Image (tube, rainbow, N blue to C red; front, side, top):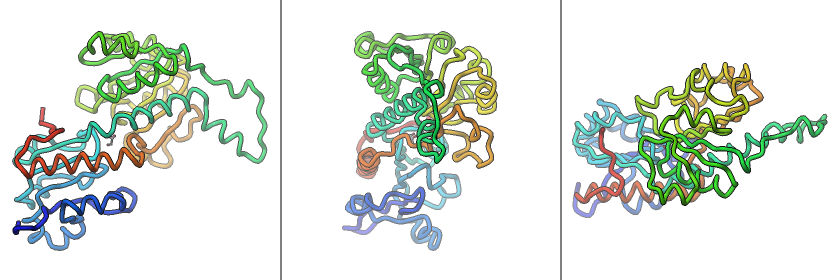
Length: 328
Ligand SMILES: O=C(O)[C@H](O)CO
């Protein structure tokens, strides 16, 4: 890098369906010389030598050995979210490249998504919206009875920062709260949100009216919710997934929704994303599917970019990264 030159930052694309947002570009350009994958691929050799950082936006660009080999000056990869399941952490670390995620920025907006899905499913908002706008609108009250949220039990699976913010919100909605997590939260933290720890997930599944999945995708959580777990749930219960599609066995979920093993599901994540247009889950009435809305609010996405920049600059200056992720 020549003196006075800004460090080179590689992004997948700017704008488009999954490119970094145009509104973030001036901020990024204050700190970096911005390069897109298209520009890099047109001049791999010269640009490859200069790129010191990658900003992953919606899991893109795909990081593989070939890309890492063509970026000899790469020092850091910053992710625009908290989940790192799309990255081979060991591979990246073997190139001496540091990695960071953006936990601070995501938790409130993702927790809002979870609560929005819970409320929408409980009160059948999508279904009644469709009834209300249909030209032949006709309903009777019995058709649109929802589930009362106050007094219902919410089971949160994964009590990290997002899970905890969901508990805070659920408390305000007068819900009873159970949670399952690898480790139990401190008593004061549990008391602050009125949450009760379930060491065994089975006990949470048996008691909850709403089960909200907030775990990271790991080999241990892959298909965590399958046929057996769905059958443990109450027939009146709703499954909400805001983690990763692969945490649920989708075939088992489809069968459970079709046969009334559980009442309904609300999914912000599926496997794959999006589902093929002819997928049977899309044909059900007792499901709500959103397109991985998670963090997507104006403020949270901007904060994520700020958090990424903070991490990248720390790595380039040889300082500790505020949200470094190490391979486990
Ligand atoms: O992991 C996250 O923070 C979001 O799901 C975006 O990938």
